[in-house]
Amino acid sequence: MAGGRESFLLAALDDRISLSFPAVMVSTGMQGGCTCENACGLRIGTGNVEIAALFAPKPQGLTSADDWTREMESKGFPELRKLYQLMGAGDRVSLKPLTHFGHNYNAVSRHAMYEWVNKHFDLNQNSPILEKNFTRLTRDQMSVWNDNHPVPPSGEEFEVDLLKRMAESNMKYLLDLAESDPEKLRSILLSGWQVVVGRRFADSGQVKWKLTGKSDKGTYLEMSGTLDNTTYHESLPVVFLHPKSQWNGRTRLLISSRGKSALYNPDGSITAEVAQYLAKGSTVLGVDLFHQGEFLDQGQDVSQTRSVENPRESAAYTLGYNHSLCAQRIHDVMTTVQFLHTFEKGPSKVDLSSDREAAPIALAAAALAGADKVHSLDADTGDFAFHEIHSIRHPDFLPGATRFGDVRGLKFILGIED
Image (cartoon, rainbow, N blue to C red; front, side):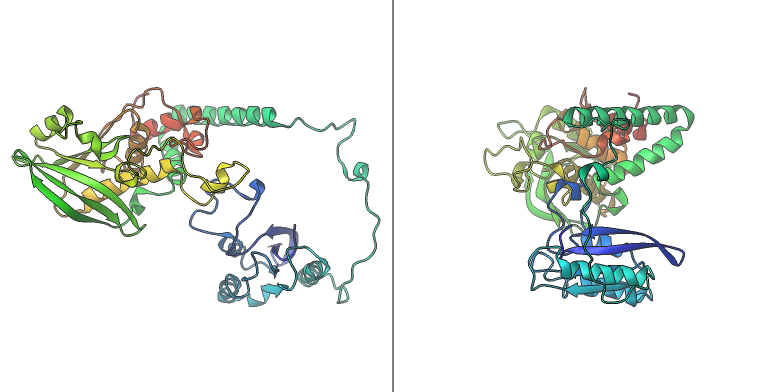
């Protein structure tokens, strides 16, 4: 732990303090530089100051230095202090600014910790508390491992095997629950997938339609524009094809790896599939999900997702703070379905179809939306499985998906026979 960036958190049981542990890097400017301080989904829409705030009203002391914590005195700590004051515990949080020192855990920072622990542990030590000379323990004295208790196995091969066994154990639990209490399992899976995707359908947001072009194509109208999700500041290019004959009150949402261009042949005419839906009286809606169609430059391909610049490749560096591309595309489908159900001239029923590549996106969106929002689903995932993705830069990489049954879990939520 380096001084100038630490928060000393003291956990209390009843009125007695029983445990202390450090939480490093409490600031608004940086959240952590090591893989050990990050995890996928950990800080999406939040940060270390808010995480530290969860500890209130238990005692919490902080120091800052001339590093990424230098602004804590004006950004982060005032808000933390207001929270403690709101809870009637204003004396239980403090900040000692030591910005004349660089990144460190020097004697001055340590003394701040000693005084704080002395106060909140009721140690009754004379202040100031001074460090004393000590004899450094040897490696053998500090180690718990010996001939009778050898070091357990470790390394990449061991970790991969351990994670595999954990996944298999989790899947066994889910399968057993499917037999004993299917409704409980469905509830668990739905809650889990809401966390994995990072958005509930009920929280899809407020969506507005902006028309940018309209053409009469003879038997149908072509209307292009955007769906603007004002809640999340997201915008999706879309195209509506609306039959000029009797509308049956249904809208067919087509999801494709090619975006809304999948509605058309290379010569610009609509595909036979789209023509068939229009002939039956359905509106057809095509959409460019994130990093499809109009989101890309001419000829650009998204075979790998974006990542933060870091010489150490770790999914947590990017996905600890941002939704995965797969999750964002699921959000986009839910945004579109939400609009169709809230638009005053919207359909009475929404049908969802996809090509093979986009099927996992459609399946997940339908599972989260529910049968009352997506009335029919045509999405053949084939032999796709999230656990078969071996690259953290893959467009369909979705952290946590395998924990909640993978594709089989989504189908179970929807009542689809696997």
